[in-house]
Length: 572
Image 1 (cartoon, one colour):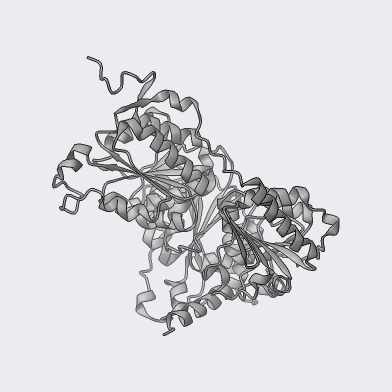
Image 2 (cartoon, rainbow, N blue to C red):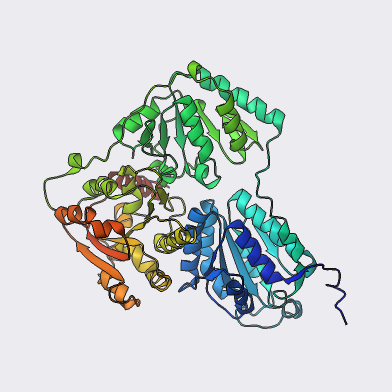
């Protein structure tokens, strides 16, 4: 006898097939995660649909990797199991929420019958509450859907994926074991999810545009400052069109690094308050109007809140509002406003004063010794990078040092300046390298990570090896947690780490002889030789570099920010 609950379906398919097909339609080709008994049946559908299962070593690394994948591919998905699995991923998901990264977190959970009966199951708190873990994810998800009813599941999935894309933040999908193979209408898959951004109210948008133009045309020394949310909310086309149309000098923040083509003649460098190069700091702070696009004015993004700019001289463009000086216009998205400003403005009426010219200052930072210093190394990295590289930097010396590296065209920078979870970059490197391969692109993936941070998530190198990925990994060996040393406890033992034989881990994690290369670099001459080596530059296999720098050396911006952080921590 036919099931009356599905007899009306014209093209019935299983819930799991519907979910994974929708992800596939949006561009997700690989699924991160760790298997667990509450998600195993759902996992069967991944390979059946032509998707690839990653299989990470733990859920935290899977979350970091999903974050990195999304930053390159546009969106990602991670599957964990109820309770023990999902909680292990929450740090990474919180980071994605903090930094506006669209990650779909799918959690396999006990059946609806088990939940209704309040059964005393494994992976629970033993109190019959099956909502407690979802509640924990509520505040780090822009949409949370419990897929308990097959009649509404398809709509719930479509809504969640749409919100993940449009808001550029994680969503949470809780799927019980007995719902995985329930039937939904497959015909819905013929209509793609609408991923267009909602348009602004035309009258409100026109008004805001006129206000922006009024102040922009009156300014004597305007500039553009681009930050992270310009990347996350996908307005980089508008940013470059604005720069080209107005001919204004354009700067980026640390979180906005690579948002602007750094070979553009109008590019003026990284502005981070007192952590900026002097010419950049003077030019930005002399401006009488700053157009900030997607700003996140956090402590590490501003060298400890050391901006010397006034809101009276600022127009902020955001994904949910525009702020012109002290007037705020909620519900107006920056995309429409920027596009209309570009289309409307008469550049001949603008005052466009050129900004500073930025170079990789290698010679100026050479102290004449063979010791590899932070000040010398990061400008030197600029000579090694090439067009379209993906550069991942870890919280700590790498995150701050990369400010001094001028990028070639098309480089994508990945970092976690706001959330700042150490170890993030290793997982993100795996995700970024995989996303690049899934996209069919020939881009090098290059990771710079400190020795202390690397030890937190080193196992993800094993996943890279198993997947046949070919990143170049620089582990900065400087004896521990440098950023913490400069905040507090320069010689404290809690900032020390065990000195691993880092490059030997590649073999330990299962790489076959001939499938990888390792290097130990301790002098400037060795760096110079490595950076011009044709085989090293080709990056045709996984490459692992131990890079030795002094223990008490750090980028200037890190020292300033750490000092500000220590002062703030000590405030009564």
